[in-house]
Image (cartoon, rainbow, N blue to C red; front, side, top):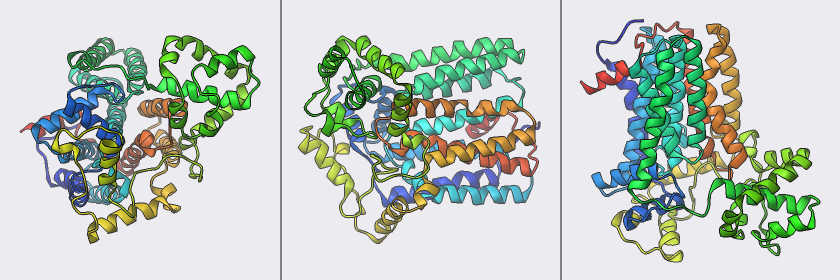
Length: 480
């Protein structure tokens, strides 16, 4: 494998495609796209009082961006550049000297960037966006490791460890994804007789994860009563209370945390927030083990109902058709009002969180302009039509990825290629068992990893010589 000596116009072209397209969206939806989660994080930063409702590592990144320049636009720019650099490296690795290969990469990049969900997410202040980018890049790095039969350098392992640490800190289920992935790849390196790197990977990964976690201590981050386990257990017990025969003593125990007079009205299979609103989480925390045991007890006694519950509460993970009763959306846009302005009012006025910093007071600068109306209408039209399945549906892209992996395995003649999909499988499983609502952002990595697999297939088609044998070589070029 040859190593690159310099960057060329092809690299710059691939880099500029997402930069330009996403920047156009940012200019139109200036200063950014934000929802309740975004406002909550910004208010934490403004007050200097931090809660771990959102992983603090992402709040910390947003805070650093706002220190550079007090505008949410800076966060969107960071996300745009992050994706653009990663995508450029991915395409570089899978491109040879063939002009046709390059042209297909350009066309593919344009198509991907022009799909509204990708452009909209690049400027949306959600932790899920950066998490998805880093998960995609982790899958790519594992592809590189498999290509090299596990013969990777310490610098490569440092990069993988850093990405794993970022994945662990950017979302609640990230630690689970990172630690299990680390364990699997440690075993892989050991089996490939790269004993030094098999020892270095867990040591470095754990070190970096602890460094990320230490930010919580440094900034005195407080625990939040709402966590994924508590929310899922309460939602599951509410379902069991409504649908199963439960011992009287166990039912009374459930009613200690869930308002029995409101549970039937509040329960919706695909939305746990109404149950959260009628759940006493302080009582749950005092006796968490008992409530988890109750959920496990009736799941084991009624396995078919448990399986049915899981599939009905997480259809986004497996169903390619969005039903009318799904609670959740691919993105949050509105046709008849400035959504950013109304969300600002909802968070700061209705919920009585006074605005402290100017960056908290948001509204679309271009609301009502032809450009805004066009892009906004385009996204809403896709969401409300069959195009939602084609462009946005996470399950469809999961199934496509499986097909593409089979094709790639056939071409490269090694089952080890499936190792690159492990982080995404872990994320899918985590969401399947815990998602509170059917927001596509939770499974956005499905789309990105599928795009990565398409690039790999294109590279195989043109027999890529992989002139960049190590992504670190490319990063060094960027510093020059």
